[in-house]
Image (cartoon, rainbow, N blue to C red; front, side, top):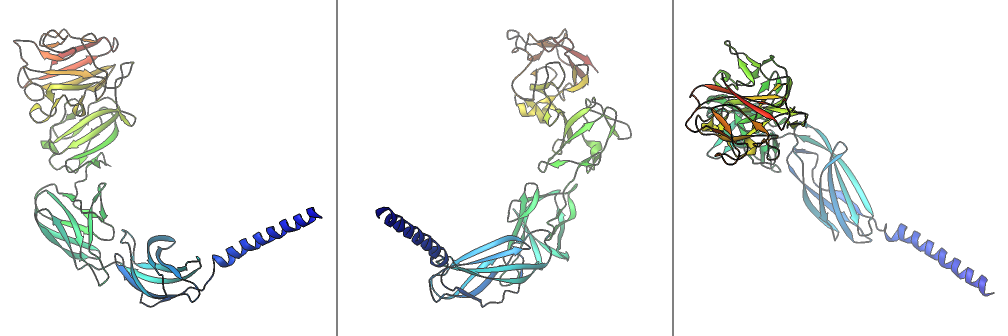
Length: 445
């Protein structure tokens, strides 16, 4: 009789446990009757508002926990706020309505969720009309002065003044309505975004009277200098530099749109040929190149590429050769000497047949009597041409061996001699016999 009694007792415990679980699930965690009443007008608001709401929360059976208020643009939740509701009564709070770009006036959903301590909830949803605030004006805030931007159209604002060619500042929108907030628009990742006071780098081709504009719907701002090479937009690095990567062919015409005075720029004779009519043709071999437009020095820096990376010398002698050192610089040594800075290394122009050249003018892009630079396999430290891997029979420029006044592989001017000021020299490195048997030739142009 003991075993049937034991089985009966175990069965009774199992049933009781199952009943207890069901009871916990059904009653312990879902009891009470939370009730919610929205007592404020929430039918309309502006984007950018902190919408104030008032609710009455109650539950006659069990203590309350929280009221969550959630805002949805279509099906996307864009904002939420939570209020602790320990007792029955009236509660108030705010929920922020985001001011996104390119979101037109329309309807949104505001959801209220009241929950008691047993996790039982009640929900209520309301449709709300949202409109973009009609700012009476905006402010362009610069380091030295604030300029009032007048409204010139729907969402459009402008200030017209005598400005320098470069103006840096952020845009501030005033509070609109009792629930509105002032808003700032600044520069983030080369575009205008809300919530930033990083200065926007407005740029114009010339100083003088011009307009700075901003659209509060699209966040479009102007003016900015946009540079195009053969119709392709270059990426903005900062106020002074733009860059792009292009497949270029020898002899093809190259056009730079967005530069008014390109005729006054320094044109690199290795990579470009400028004709008498002002047109520019590419002079390098067919390939991919990175071109950096330098507004400070007014020239185009050209660097050979291999796929997505800057080119380096390959074992078969193809690729690129770079120059690092003193007494050399483009467009000039006075303004942009390379020095021992790898990030400023010059890329010799690949001319085919494992040959690389650079054209330099004595007194301008190369010192006439004092140089100390060498050839590298990459735009950085690493592979380089030492005294045993490069030679020359030139009577003006010698290659150092560590005992003749220059370190191994470094170039120097022969003592007592100098290059002729104003004369151009073409330096060519020929790897036809292999990377360890490079030959340097120097020819007057």
